[in-house]
Structures are given as C-alpha cells and as structure tokens.
Image: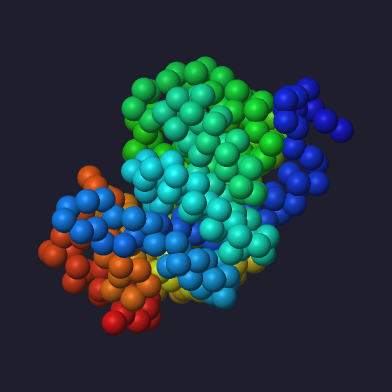
Length: 320
C-alpha cells in the first residue's frame, strides 16, 4: 500500500524500489573517473575507454554496485558534458548486471533536480544525493531539499551524509522523516560513527538501506546492522572488499575481520591526501588509469607514495 508520502510528479514503481533496495548491499564502488593527461597546462579530458574497462573489471571481481560521478569521481570538477558522458558509458557497460547509481547532489535544489532528471534519462538506477555543501542548511532546509528532489525524481534516491566535506550533518531524526517517502530508499552515512547505525534503525519507522561511507569502519557498520558500503578502497581491491562485506553480512565476523585487516592500511592511506588523489595515483601505479586528475586537485605528493604502495602490497594488489 502506498504511503501518504509518495512522490506524485514522477512516482517510482514498487517493483523498481524493492528491486533496487535488494541490490543495495555489499561492496559498492565509488568509481574514479579516469582521465588523459593534458597538454600545455590545459585540463585533462575523461578517458571513456578506461572507464569502461574499470567497469568490466569490477563486474568480474564481484563488486555489487557502481556509483558514478560521486565525490571520488570528481563530479564537482568536470564539465556537465563530461559528467553526462561518464554516466552514459557506465550505464551501457554495466547493462543492468548491478545497480548503477549516479551522484546528482549539488549546492542548490534546482540544480540537484536537474542533474537527477538527466541521470535518470540516461538509465541510472538511482541517484546518490549529497547534502548541499557550503551553504549549511538547517535540518528543515535539508528535509525540504530532499523532499523536493524526491517529488520530482523518476528514480529512487540515496541520501548522502558526509559532514566532513559539506559542513552540515543530516541527523537521524531528519532521515527518519525522509525515509517515509517511497522513493527514498537508502542513506550513505559517512560520519564514521558506527553508533549512527543503531540510532537510524531505532528512529526510522520505515526501514531504509544503510550504507557506510567510511571504509575504515565499514565492517563494524555492517556488523551493527548496516547493509554495505559505498567504498573508495574497492577501486583498487574490489574482490577483497566484496569478500569482506559478504562475510560480515553472513555473520562470519572473525573471517571478515581477517580480510579487513589486509585492507586496513588502504582504508587509512587512501586518505593521506584529499580523496580521490591517493586512489587515482594507486590505480595509475596498478596500470589501470593514467596519473591525471582535475585541478585544483594535484597528483599524490611523493612523500606519501611509498605508504600507498606498501598498503597495496599488504592487500596483495599488484603494481607495475
């Protein structure tokens, strides 16, 4: 039965919503956007061929879903033309084998609605909508923002809370209000505070999928009742991340901890500089992408490179 908080303009079908929720678990990669180095100081261009190859690799390695054009994908830095091209390539390459989630959050509500509409038209299965950054809205402002996006979206929404980047915190009580909307199906909770899982479970009368946005605490997050992680580490160690998440979901916590220990240095050292600087450099060291990133971000500082290489080695990830 539909709730009173359905989205009348573009309602999401019950079958689509339930199918997506069932797929939002395990290791979901926040995929990088490969780029080609620029000439004479110009901005790099997106390497769509490499992006396609990365998607195929993730499918082969057991990744459970792909977020394209999230923070790790440099969505805030690329042109809208490249943003849409990247979503299109990922959607076509994945071909419904796992959920494809497009990052559509922006600083304004109207821009967020526009990007969500365009991502849906390209075939994205869902939209990952970050809290509006920089402007620091109130809890009521956040509620009205997500409500407006939900009311105008033809695909399900995943809330994204990352106070360390946005300067605002989507509190569990506000999430509980938003969870009543039929096409708000999940939250990416990136505070790193595992106690949020219990609080969200307790306050959300309408259950939603709970996804960690913090690799270092993802295993504990799942153990506390979460369903998976939207992961940076999965970019370089997709099979191990998928294995760790599945073990945790299956209640095999000792085995999950053993796998997670292999990944622990990556969880830490892929954030020695701002994401996605270290993970793009790591993928370049693996031969998966070129060492290119959109300004104002720059390539990984040489002083941090040995630590990242050592972390890759600990996880048995081969480099060139």
